[in-house]
Length: 131
Image (cartoon, rainbow, N blue to C red; front, side, top):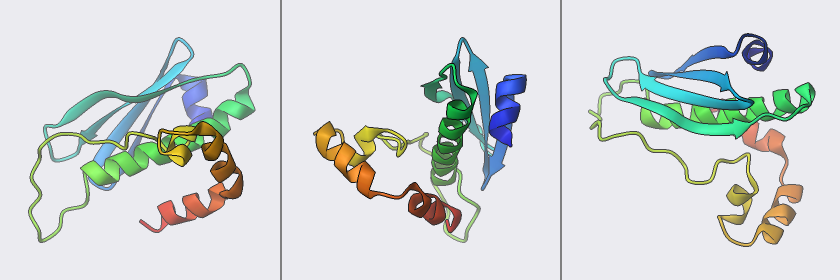
């Protein structure tokens, strides 16, 4: 739903945990900026992906892009707990899970392709929903 809204309107925001991501489309490229709801930390253009000419492919890729953004937001802006959290900056995973670099750990992409083919994305998405 939000992927369609983003493609149609060019901007969409998502709030998760204690942070918010603002996704925008510029020149066939989607980027997102993130900030904490009760924080002064603001990160501009954290990640980006290039859109293709095929709308259905874009929607599929955007769903994965949103999921990775949600992980970044949860990691950096978790819900308040009894343990105080130091605010040092904004950290992200080097290799987002929607790329082959994630499966290859940045090394041999042939092994990454084989791991990707063995992996079911539904398993990863189910794990994300349980966070």
